[in-house]
Image (tube, rainbow, N blue to C red; front, side, top):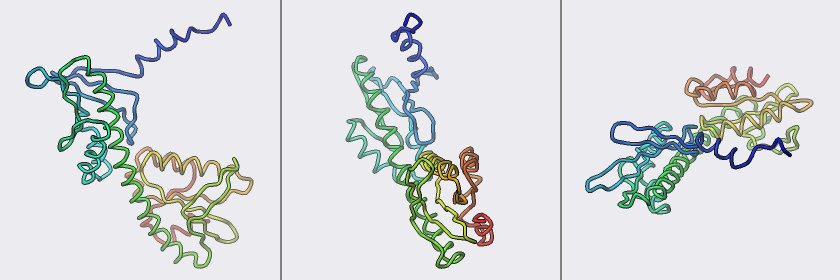
Length: 247
């Protein structure tokens, strides 16, 4: 008992690492312990406006998240909806709040950061779902051609942990099962596929595990995460490549 660290001391040591700030020109940037879909920290920008008004803005970071996933067309509509929920303002590329009283800046930081993250999350999640659906649709067609009468679409399989996993397709090839999973370059999708595949790989008689992606080169570090869990193939590769992946 006497060796325990005081919780107050532990908290005091941790907090500075959760929030950081830096000055750049006439602005201050505060990074918060909230994460965008890309994995970067949510950051707000503080600047003075005319009349001494302090503007708390996400500096367009939510827009850039949408841009990185090719989904900027959704930004105006989604940002307006989220801005109404959090009582913040939105312009062409950013979410913000203008405050007259410095004591209100802290609340504005909370509101803007939450709204920015929520906006990015909604846009990217919807975009990822659309991409995954497109990969899955193409995958279903391809597998029906390659393994006629030997494919279960939208299948379920139980892993070593007794968790039941939903997968895009289960193909039977030479008496062996091959799992094909459509995966987008989206952190949640990568984590889900990797977790499922590692669980399935731990079975006594594991199936062949194949992640199907749009483009390997665009995966970045996410490619290695998937490659550790199974094989990775592009949806546009040849039928022979899919047969080899299933073997």
